[in-house]
Length: 231
Image (cartoon, rainbow, N blue to C red):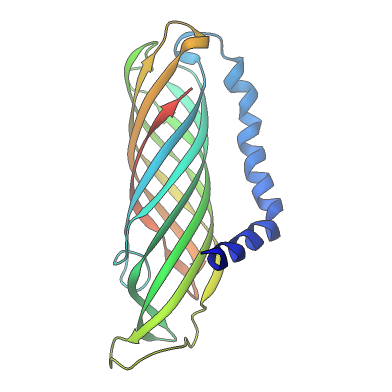
């Protein structure tokens, strides 16, 4: 377990500047969040658990592999009908599926770790209430940082044992970008700014293309479910 974690820690340190920029974007909105005074304009810090089901083309996505698990932190602010948000998701997934290795279909076990900042807009068709149930639509742009570890199992076409890859790498880091959106709900509680909190949930889709698995167009598309609290 320690050997798997150390390369990713080294990768994070190597790309510290990119991480810093992502966090600066989130922190940039913090003053606006806390400057809100009352009612439906109050900003929240959100903390949620994430579950993902992957989709996409065979051998070019994780559609035949396992689900993803993780968490997110974020902030939101704005007005009654239109609000903006910034969030940071960290997820991990593992499984066994087929990949293309120099044009040959091979079967491999994999472990994916992804960190993905996201900035977007939420629309409340009926307005965000001071208390009670609020429904909203959301959408935003995504930038992802990905670490993929692969271990070969066999060549699918012939069944021969395979111990090394030709073009695939056992460990690979790559960046990706895309967009996502969906629908969410909030249950808001509390009578004043200091005592307000919420429970929230979201369901949506993300379309991300990343440079991993020796491809520049590998798909990390998923259907995701999020549940959490806002303070």
